[in-house]
Length: 317
Image (tube, rainbow, N blue to C red):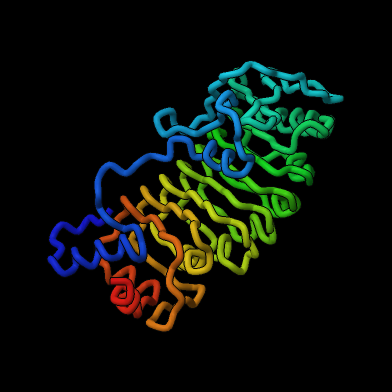
């Protein structure tokens, strides 16, 4: 949200044009919540064909803890050479395709021993029934190493683990088939470069409602080689500055969704050396910056080295 309350008529008009033609930084109230963020992604990727499916989604009203809404009860026992971790529940969840779900609602301590138990359990699972894994509502403080060894995974959701503050290097890059990644409602404080490099099938990531205050400039930049990544959700975090990677992606990919709303963004940096002028290719998708601490339009234009915005606005009018 633009917090500056004395915006001139000309500046206000520019802001409206920006929200339509370039960036979504308007101050319209009633921003629609991403109530079924993960479910929408699953529907697009998996191709749901029946309303009688099991829904898996993240809701704003429930602190983004994973909730299930079952229209059909159809559970199948998971085959593993090791037992499900103590005080945890291991089963298949259908959304509509099966996900192996591990949840530990009744376990609030012994995170280190839980890591060992999950590692033993996952390495003993017979992975001929699903390629999707959901681990949530646990006291985990680190991602189990066994997750990094599941090279056939197409979906990985680590959301709802409040003590998970960092993600490991050299882990997800081994999951070359990964298409969907979720880590919403955790305790993440930063995202480093290289987490997803060269995952050419990755199409959706969400980090909604964490405590993220910094993001590596190259994490989602085009140099990371993520040609199919269209949906990036970083709303409701603690970001105060952002580099030019969102507009670089929006310039290349049509119908992408990059949501940076409900942060504290007030600074715009350009370590990637981007420039936007009258000869630049237009942006094909919006970048959502609503409800941030942007005070002056010149901060965005200057920080991101934008000099040709009005040429594109005039050409569209």
